[in-house]
Length: 161
Image (cartoon, rainbow, N blue to C red; front, side):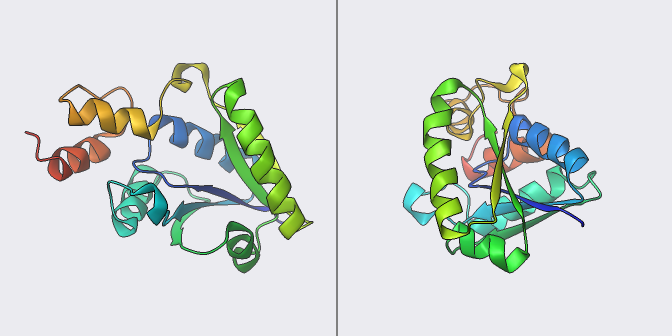
């Protein structure tokens, strides 16, 4: 049986930490769908289409990885994609409680959907999209946190030179 995994998130913007999780999941599963959530309640910096495009560009070197956006219940989207596994990254122990709640809710909604937690590589544990945006807004260098494609998108969006 071919196992399709779904890696959901807002990816606003996609970071090297996200990329690390995707690359590792791509080795574990036959195919991985990076599912970019619309998440209008989070008031993302980038529109959904831009976040999808950035993720596609950053992850284009991974043959068994695809990227798409979604704006429905995650369990429903997993069903539409015929995914059997949700991949979630954990940066710190503090992430686990929230992620465990999400995994439990998704399992209640779709009992055969398993959640696999991957700890983030140590060098990325402190990186979050929120911190990257804050550093960029304040004119700081984000080169070590995100792909050059994302850096350019941040500069354009934030009107930085």
